[in-house]
Image (cartoon, rainbow over all chains, first blue to last red; front, side):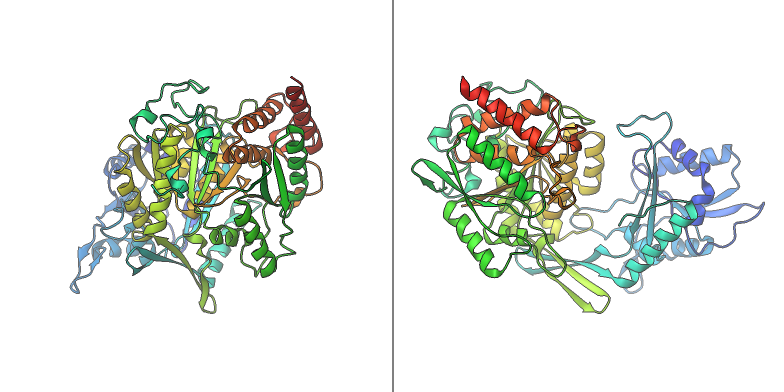
Length: 205
Length: 396
């Protein structure tokens, strides 16, 4: 799933996506063969906050550029299941499983209480174990650092985000960071394979 | 405020001078102090460098001379400590160092016990970084927890003449120093699965929050920002954040806000001038402290201090051992010298502190710099330049 990064205006994001779409498409595994010549349907999760606006911008621009993508818009707000537990609506899950690729806007996570992170839930549900963020200096957008070209590949399913916390006694909280060999190895392999595929020379842990 | 709590930041009378606004009065009077005390005139009217170091004079003094425990540490520690000793001599500061042989190689429980005893006896220490090899627990962490040095304070201020991408940065990073991710509680559940415990307690969160706000008052700063990830770690960081908010209520003259750590890092590299005082749990403090130090010149010029209720241990801000540049005469002595100046401030010798700080900053400004700052001088040349300046000043 691709997430718009930082405060980049959506048209600049699109330029980035369009510039090396194959790179980003290849980066997600388990992709069924791209439709050759036909329209590809993609799940769209507009999200919270500015999500709906920027998603609309994307739709407009893709339409104007006649990009052969059809949007299957879904809402991931948790609903109460038959067992009383809150979970992502089945419709949303089915959509992603069917299309294999999605575009999501930002999903806010309430601070301190409230529902758990939906971003996390989505990653767990679809086993999106690697979060890949290419960071490249944008031409025409000067920043203090020039010629930045790095990619961060983040393990996306465990670590500090395991969500295992306990109140031991009043005023003492324990938060468990979980690291497993399996997940570490998986994301490490991904990083090196990504490096080979993209012709990059160094991986820093 | 209890008499022994550094968090109360109560001044000894002879320290009052230009830093103490209205004696023990911690209120609007401090926040709207109009005495200039050499303030920069920038929109953030902060107190002079070093004020945050002012503490309770609980330190050993024999015949009018301070006794300070010295742990050279590993890597570039020993060579830089030699520079410190030379310069302290030339500056004529009344400090005697009690050198403690603690290092990565020499670090039995007995050595550790003696080091701690020495610092308890002297009240103040100056240390290099002790390396941690695989399989051993960090001696640095042990020192901090056993001496209950609950706060780690780094002042990150743009230095004139030191190349950096931003000017007019002045951030005070206040990091909880004894719990959080550094609890050193880890175990294998089953082979290939490790649990690492991050512990957050209300007591320590409250202690560091109070310290941050009290420091805000003392240093005439305006805002405290709590950094956290309470949307994901709702209980632990949530507790930290709640306590900070609660403590903020007792300091209505100080503005309080909070920021999630990922956004905070982004803001730091995009618009660092927006930050004033930052209060953070242990690991975020480590990371943010390093980013802030990098923004104003890097590890070669960063000073740090570990402050507890009864003891204080000073060290180079980003706590690097500099293993790879050891013995090559290229290590930057500025960080440790500026730290020593802060230590002099803490010991009550504000004049000596100012003299030393001025010497180092003047030399940096004049272009005599080590390679990490883009210069071509070596350690000895920088030290000699500082010595020259001090001799000159002394001559007057």
